[in-house]
Length: 338
Image (tube, rainbow, N blue to C red):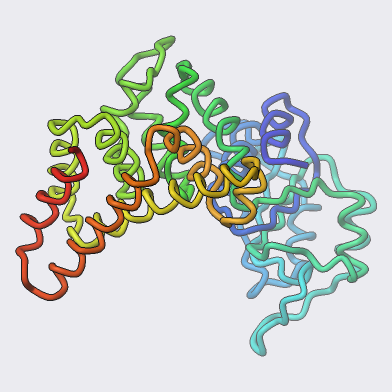
């Protein structure tokens, strides 16, 4: 079951007696656990039983699950480090688990307890008998890092929860980074929701102003400003990067990467490659290819090669110590805008 389907089912009170969360995306794991706390427990003050399966045998978890709750109608039990479902070898100090006890329980779980088994391993070992059995009876939720083609759906869901709308062109702002950090993106969406208010719409302009830029997303904006030959905007973004303590050498590297990507894409496109084939050949992030596709028609081969030469010479001057780094980069940016 996907993360999105699981969150929807839980909110609709379709709650399974046993869940297995596996993968390295802690954002998904935490959200599912919070969702279960919200819909399983009657009172927010009700406690959740938590166990570390490196220290506690699984049979103790099962005993807890089978013990009827005294002060509420349902119990939520979260057991981490369920490595017995994976190919990972247990440490020498790890406890021994009575797996037969778990096998018996999953055949006939009690209706007043919800157990969540958690492992941060990306894959389960489907060769194991217990993994095969639990896969048949439990709700299995892979919590793997989100793919770029799933990000828009995730942003839509968070925006819906925050009761705001996202303009179609504003998604670009969230898709710029090559690395996706969901906790950071959620914080940015919360800031935007506070800014536009309930029922408001986040436009691209608002997102550009409010969302904190990473160095890679700023380099996209810097290239856009260069394309427009907007010297004022170029130096506004440059100053923002300087205030963020970004090194001139790093800025040169980011700009060189952008122009090199556009040049490589332009060459492949002229050879007849389509976008998907170009992405596969260049092994680049989908958004990088998408943005380069939009930009390449604005640049000629002589300009792109000239820009790369300017940046390479500036980089060499700084590293040789023959030019002051900030001044050298500023002169290079002026040349790129000509």
